[in-house]
Length: 594
Image (cartoon, rainbow, N blue to C red; front, side):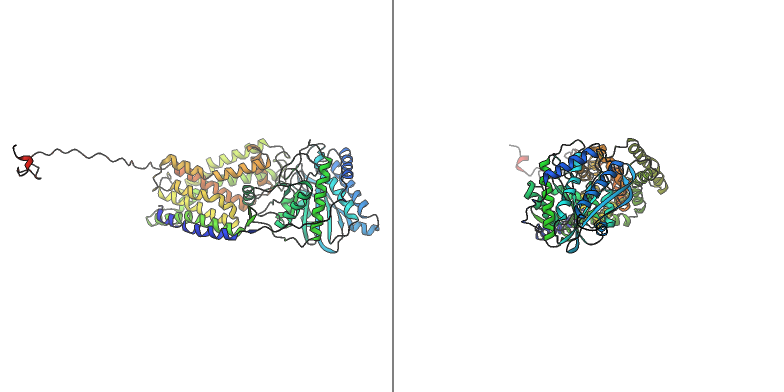
């Protein structure tokens, strides 16, 4: 089935692609500097505001009376800052609010957004966003974002800016980013940047302090990232930089629990700023007033730099930063295509060889696809649980592991549906296809070809995701190829090895989100049920999983290779009557009597 000469030849383009990738690297965009010191941010006043808010509103679950009361307090602060010298009509234009219903950590709730607009000389906008709600009692560090927002209102009220500035207080940010998602519909004019305030006063650090991740492919524009990092570095020290593996992971499987995620996914350039990073502060985390002052100054410095600088590009950043150089997405796409080519050509050529010999490969492709049915059924079951209200809270965006209690019953029920789909639904489909034990070349050709084709489809959508699946395409090809004498045990090991990159990706997200295996499974279930994982992504993931399981089944059914031991030749005794060689007639010296 597998033509090793063709397979080895197909690796030659990889060398050319590596040269192209090396020459594609270019420098990162520079951040916008500013020489104006952010001395107007009054740290002690912000700390006093924080203490007053924490005492007055200790319970702020999304949509609760405490959340609504804090919204009214924020609105009064905006009115005091922006409406002192204007009439009622102009004040109504500068300070406004709206209500909406959305899914939160407590289910569907009516939420309230309060906005203050500071007109500038241009219609282009800089948006500063902070959420008010909290999952736990107190959560003073999480409330420091609202205190910083009110202090920024006092600072910006008397400042003339080039761009218009919007200060936005939302709810639903404790999990699911409902307020940030709703802001997308009300963004209005062109938005140059959105600065999401994290826990400005928290004492626990999780780098990077400037978080650019998106819930779609790409991240915040690099110029915006560099500008925020430069401003924070001037006030608080090095904000940290995302590692190369973490960049790759976020581009391969976009997921973030920060409020900047849905904004970047919708095309609004956004970063989150705060010492707690993406995860934010815990409920009982202490607050440092000096840190609130430092990071508040960093945010104000960022606003000043963006206001006086050139326009920030709107497109998402999809390249990898490698030692200060950017490798563009097209270079990664080219490299991944070259790495996939040997497996793709090898499997298609093997399929053609089997078909020429009369093998019926079509039914074996359907046999491999049947293994994708159980994951699809499990995903549909999770969506149905959310639709009928049995899953509990399933926000539309990913949530941190400690924000929504793990639903053990829902997890077990979904796993039972997955197992039942494998035992009953898959077996029914296999019986209908009329296929026997998968120990033929046709089964191997069907599994290998389907794997290569689905990885190629993933490559069209996202080359970073395909890069994690390329090892599986190669390993599963060798695991099922019957003419590769590797034995049953090694075949199963190769088939299992194809899942290693996916397991490492899950481990990476577990470390980034501080989630164990159970919490990570719960986050994935909520992401599917809440709609973050789209139907195409779920379907492709199910097919990849089905191909891997089918490869394991084919590898277990491999026929052991024939023994290579050479049997010793039979010993044949030959007498003098049959010997006709030299000396048989006595004509040699050795035959003469001495």
